[in-house]
Image (cartoon, rainbow, N blue to C red; front, side, top):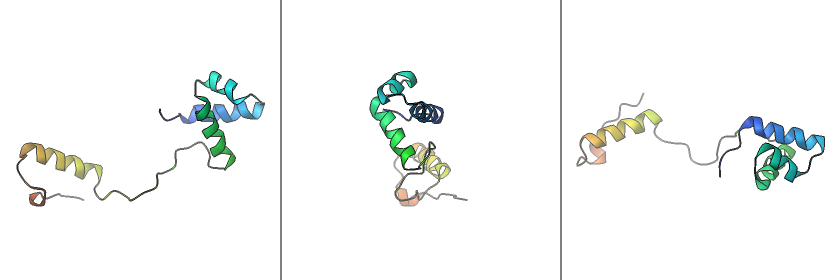
Length: 89
């Protein structure tokens, strides 16, 4: 299970407009039948071929802050979380 690249999604839509069956499109583009169906469903609902941001709560810490925290915790594994100071800019 993986992400279908944007260029393959566009090929799927193009082949569908040409009238190819979903199975034939899947064989040509090397994507499963369910993947082809998902791409065509998104295209039908005008969601396009790009990856949309996911739903859910936004992250509290930036990627940089998380990596700083990991590095600090590896330096001193016995130190408790409230004792860490994060320089988040």
